[in-house]
Picture 1 (cartoon, rainbow over the protein chains, first blue to last red):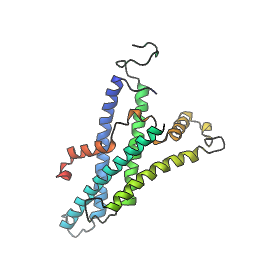
Picture 2: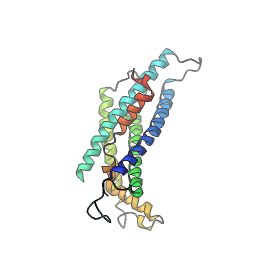
Picture 3: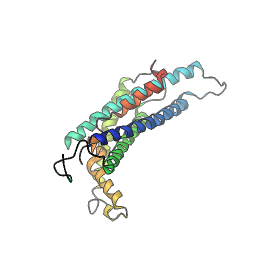
Picture 4: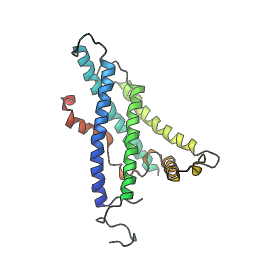
Length: 85
Length: 140
């Protein structure tokens, strides 16, 4: 298949931007669910405890570092696959 | 300039909806695979005790291997699927031949089918930058 021409690239870029937003929303709510499940288990108070707060901080920070690292490796593997072709 | 598709395409010509659909399908596929990868390797490599916000050395190593293996599994599953009696487990008989064709392409070309459209799109960068924009408190 051919490369996209200028107009197609523009339209594709718009598509990418719409999907980015959707993907961010998906990632964000899944991160909330993950950290809520892993960090919040005590319902004797309606406020987050300092222990829960610190867990949440680490949980979300760690997940972002995790997805960044997986992203780097993903690109490397992808590039290697393309070279094989 | 080209006429009737001869001599290459016009860089300023009208857009071809079919090509855009193919590019979109590919973008969806790559994004989907990336999201599954993030999910699977998090489950396998990251403990939920969260004593630190950093990845430790073991977790980092585990993630690197996890991604490499995920790609290998992808290739392996593709090879096995191609090994049917007539080479593709009778996919030709499928009523929806378009679907069968897509599946064959998927097997033949792996997760990066026609990557030329999307190889510059860095999924994690996109997500990270969007997060910095929408959820800056994570980065302070």
